[in-house]
Length: 112
Image (cartoon, rainbow, N blue to C red; front, top):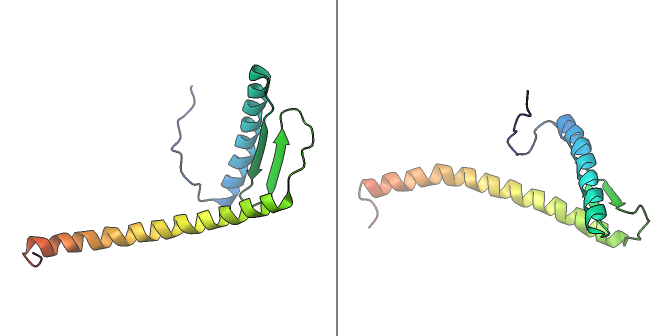
């Protein structure tokens, strides 16, 4: 039996999100290591867990100093991005309610 293709979308369960993050992060690190070996380049990966905790790793396992302000700014941006996505989703839901109303007014000749 082959792999089942999944639809890529946000997972609703926090536990499932954390489990998937851990598994996929391991796969991402493996791919980054392969890229570093194949192309003879340094690769650094910075990820943020669903709980917001940053994790950093590099292809050659050397410690690279990262300015804590950079991580703080990225965490703030991540939080802002989530708020914007939520706002967009709410607006799209409202638009779905408004558009049919506008169309029905046009159909009865209420708008020129």
